[in-house]
Amino acid sequence: MVTIRFPKWARAVAGRALIALIIVGALVTSGWILVRKPQPAPALPAVAAAQAEGNAATAAGPSVLEVSAPVQAQAPQQQGASELEKWAAGLSGALDIPERALVGYATGELTLRKEQPDCHLSWVTLAGIGKASSDHGRYGGDSVTGSGALAKALGAVPLQGAAGEAASEPRGGPMQLTQQEWKRAGTKGDLQDIDDAAVAAGRVLCAGGTNLQAGLGWWKAIANYRDSDLFRQQVLGNAQLYAALSLAPQTASAPSVRAVRFALDQLGLPYVWGGNGPDAGAAGFDCSGLTKAAYDSAGVSLPRTADSQFRTEPAVPGNQQPALGDLVFYGSPATRIHHVGLYLGNGLMINAPQTGMAIQIATYHVAGDDYAGAGRPTG
Image (cartoon, rainbow, N blue to C red; front, top):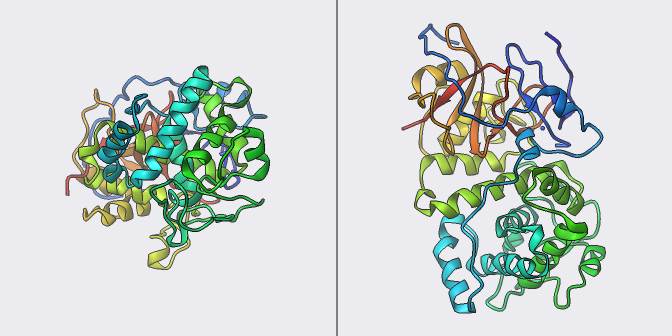
């Protein structure tokens, strides 16, 4: 077995004990034996290692993004303002996005749908950017007013989440656009207004004939918007979550969704062997420390190690795709499970991979890895 050393964010094939996950990105534990049969993974686009390494010079996302972008969401319709407001009101609580900000993201999609229909911009991408950039205009106690403008003008702010990350260049507004991006978008209006800023952000993303339905096109557009691995990961994770919740808003308060929200907030923190996170005095988490803390935050107690989580949580039938918040396991059911992640949907998981790497989103299963099945915590 070849062991490859990784930087904090990595793009290569990970040799980790028995696991060989494709961890792609400019972006990228034992107990008595209770045998559970390995679960065949549902059909997914398997990306060979050679293919993943073939584009090493370009910024790519987790390997499934080489096939598809974040899943499609409930789309707003081109109707009057009152209908758009009703649409936003129906989703705002489930998504934890202020109604007026959600109207702004929908306005961005609807505008670009007319201007550049082949771009296929979705409001969930804009919402992912808004969350990572300013927590939808709520950074520092700010808010989006009824007119769409921020109550207080917002300059450059650090990326949201536990890891944080200061802006490396002057930015402003709810979408944290640079003046160059604002000018390039040719948007008339106010950088501090969510409608104007969302339209400008959409034009930046769609520039050059980009097709955001194509995985690599989507990923490169996010990379061009802000050159930050953490930013790309946050946008991807939150856009994926918003898409899923828009189709099933009644699940927003489920422990599985709350666990995923917690895990997304930890993106960028370091892997720490035995780590239980900053609240427990550690800089970061190990794999099972992350999944346990995520479910603890949702009121569900899990065992501490990956192996014990595998042997105690109800198994997802092997012919079923994991669902949002399911635990995905790696190793040998007959001997030892050595790794666990949290399923995000669309073939992706959130995990703390190994020493020297950050908590990040990765493809959850590829041909030849030692995926052992999924578990569904029930509390």
